[in-house]
Image 1 (cartoon, rainbow, N blue to C red):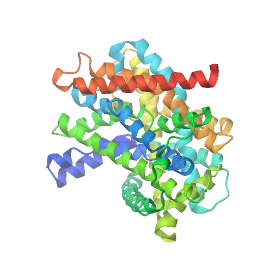
Image 2: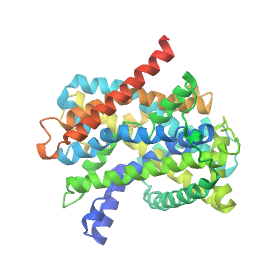
Image 3: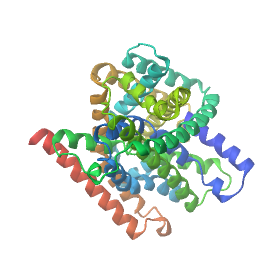
Image 4: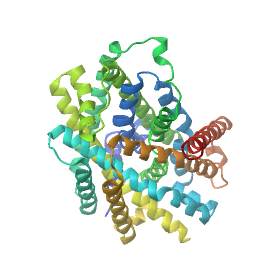
Amino acid sequence: MPSFAVRRLRESFSRASSTSRSPFWKSFGPGILFAGAAIGTSHLVQSTRAGAVFGLGLLVIVVIAHIVKYPAFRFGPQYAAATGKSLIEGYVRLGRWVVALYMLSEVAVIAIIIAATGVVTAAILLAVTGIDWDPKVTGVGLIVVGVAGLVVGGFSFLDRLTKIFVGVLTVATLVAMILSVPRIEWSVSNFGMPVFDFTTFAFVIALMGFMPSGMDLSVLQSLWTVAKRRSCTQKPTMAHTITDFNFGYVMTSILAISFLLMGAGVMHTASIAPAAGAAEFAKQVIDLYTTNLGNWVGGLVGVSAFFVMFTTLMTVLDGMPRLVATGIIGLQGNDRGRHEQLDGSRLLYATMALLAAAAVLVLLKLMQSFQAFIDFVTITAFLVAPLTALLNHLVVVGDEVPIKYQPSIAMRSWSILGILIMTVLAVLFIYMRFIQ
């Protein structure tokens, strides 16, 4: 049974090939999935909080995060397009111990990422419906529903519906951002960095952790790129693959900045502090649209945001177990580690069940405060990001990749600089948090 994400790719490619043969349209696919998976906790929660609390003070941080992480994310589809293999299979070539190290760093992170996605989805649902349920319990219910839906495989209608809502959310966000701009104080002082202390630095690390997303999304991007290549009779060129990725990356960057500007224009200007509760904060996000565009738009955006987040939850529930299962196969030294061979397998379903159960435990046992939990998730993601970025760099410059498809000297330098910046920030955070 094809996975939700892979099935979505195949349907999209089939429709695209039947309606257009132009290189422009053939270039799209995994980049849209990247954007859909990225627009979630980082944008709706962290970008909005950054604008609400610090105004324009952290705008440069959002921009820097996208610049610093760009090579590591790009190397996922680039490696897959050059070799026809996922990054996990590239890690295997570096040694099984590398895969083991990567898996150890990712398994715990994956569980909390699923938990965070579930609770943010629950928060939006509760804000839209006005139901007074516990966000943690609601998040658990949504995770269970998502897993059941993936096993049954009956989400093609939801897939098509969500694409409409992604468009609605994107357009509404851009319009609301433009209308928020006049509310912002565009003085030089408002762009100044906030006073440096550990609390502020911790939030900066949390903001960068999921900006535009956790680094493990680069591995999923490589899996999606492999799926695309095997679903098309005419293989996309490297140029088409990079164009597809750049489209999704730029789209997520613009929306991240938009949410920050909305938070700065509506909440920071009015001295509205972000709510500590999950549903309460989600309502504040929806109110950003209501303030600028009217009540009816706020309701439509709330519904759109829920469908977008629920699809993201299902993509995470499908993609993360696939990542772990592929890594397990790599550790076994078996060349069966190609993601489509996992469809319907006991290994995939067992991994999905275990990770979902771990996410449920994280939600029920670790989440006490919504904001603190989201910061914990995003900080943890940032701390392991340098390892994934380093591995991505090593495999894309390896002998398996033809010279013509390897990164340029400039891109390699950019990648190394990004790895160094992330490593220094991670070490500094650990020092200030646990040693100083």
